[in-house]
Length: 263
Image (cartoon, rainbow, N blue to C red; front, side, top):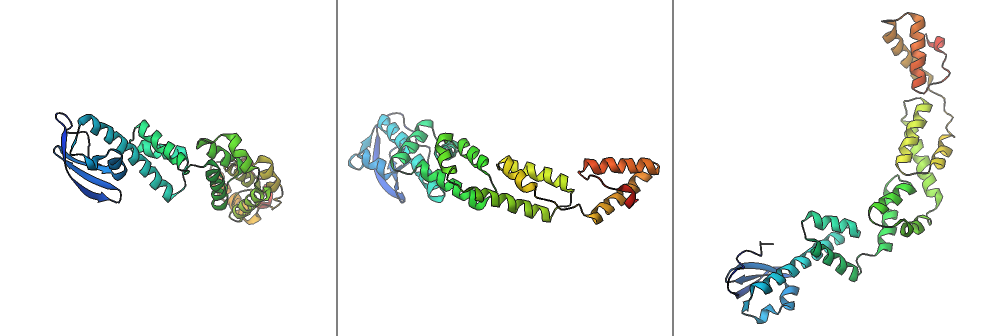
């Protein structure tokens, strides 16, 4: 929108003509410049019946127009994707609307029924569980960060079948295990931390990790030891080399490896 407050000093402005701009906006040509206003504002201020407008009246009209503009921007964002109050406030703040304009937009959206907490929370949980590998605590924290109180969120989370979380954990572990090239101990430690960060319950994660009984691949161990042997024998004798290999393997999660079997 044009800078509406320029050329506003002095005598009242003469309203010369109106021109259609967008679907619900008109450009008003005055003796001191053009101003783009929403039709709602034009009707509310009875501008169609006036030939002149004072500076003070124009200031008020411009402010109300800015508030309405913030409302339409927020409504357009909602039509693209469901958003909560915090997301809309952040959007309008980023577009540099005043606090009064943002407050007006939010209050009107609430009045018009566009900001229903139950709809947003249930939709958010559904989308997170459908599209992501996430657990309950991450969903809870995300919604809290979006401005919803814990007491309002919990009833929706309590309705979720625990099998949904269990299936996600099991599938994640199975997929990671197929591509695993680390020791089983190291794999379990890393996978545990990853699932914790994704918001799953500690006990649920351990239940599935404890079922992994796969032995470390002997061919993989043999290749690793051969590589380490070449590295360490350049600097140390055989006994020192064996000890250093044992320490390295232990740090990487390999346990009870018979070094002499490979050297």
